[in-house]
Image (tube, rainbow over all chains, first blue to last red; front, side, top):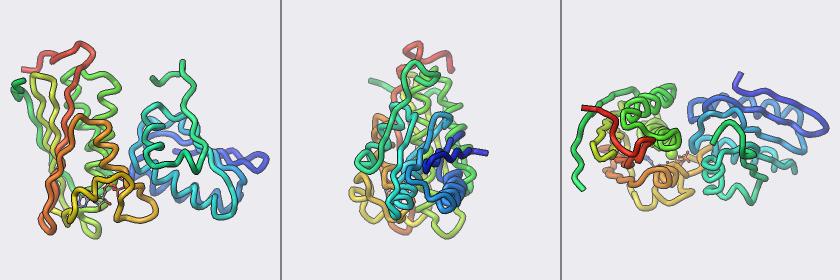
Amino acid sequence: MPVQFIYDDQTLTALLSGEIDHHSAAFLRQILDESIAKFRPSKLILDFDAVSFMDSSAVGLVMGRYRCVDAYGGAIEVLNLTPKTLRMMRLSGLQSLAVLRGKVSGGKNE
Amino acid sequence: MKHNSVNQIKLELESRSVNESFARAVVAAFAAQLDPTVEELSDIKTAVSEAVTNCIVHAYPNNCGRVWITVIIHDSGLVRIRVRDKGCGIPDITKAREPLFTTAGEERSGLGFAVMESFMDRVHVRSAVGVGTTVTLEKTIRGRSGGLNDAG
Ligand SMILES: Nc1ncnc2c1ncn2[C@@H]1O[C@H](COP(=O)(O)OP(=O)(O)OP(=O)(O)O)[C@@H](O)[C@H]1O
Ligand SMILES: [Mg+2]
């Protein structure tokens, strides 16, 4: 499974893994939206720690989930981005809509 | 600086989204001959993924077309990647390259060209409506050893 969910105290955490491109984003979008509809979390955390590759399709995926969650007053956080993926997310202006956090350095990736 | 081409590949694929990961992996594997850093390889993979995805999503929105990729490596460390389609074409290239501009609605961020520009040294786009689009990506690999391994 490219995503695992943890739901606790109004917070839905999605642990994403593998490569996120336009092809894989279609499936991720579907399962994320199913989970969001089911739990209606007040906070959605998208954890990119185990994501080995992403392109701008992942930015679109995050933007789209932001719109879903924001529609009912929920918030979104994106965790464990590499310096590059953080830069990509910032190009879209997402930092003003969601909390974006980089990987703590000393970790396995750069 | 003179760039002597030392090796080249050509690849033709159908515009199916499942081929996106294949295309970027092939280009990265070939560019590995220049002994790039992990970082440089990941930049190339990302840029190729953007260009190929654009062919699949935009050039051939309702049908399956063909995508041609040419990769040339030079002894100077320069990699030149050309991604070509015979799809719908881009009416206004300057506008299309603006960050956040997209014609594809909700799930696209309009960042593809911005990402290609930020991860490569040079991005060139040629396009004609109804004829197709060619995106040329260039990057000079400084590499782990600072030059070409022994491709020859
Ligand atoms: N090969 C192509 N053929 C036709 N139109 C294209 C092509 N590549 C890009 N475009 C046009 O240029 C626009 C901008 O492309 P860009 O890659 O920057 O953003 P996007 O694909 O819309 O979104 P994202 O890449 O963030 O998912 C596209 O929306 C599309 O209208
Ligand atoms: Mg794009």
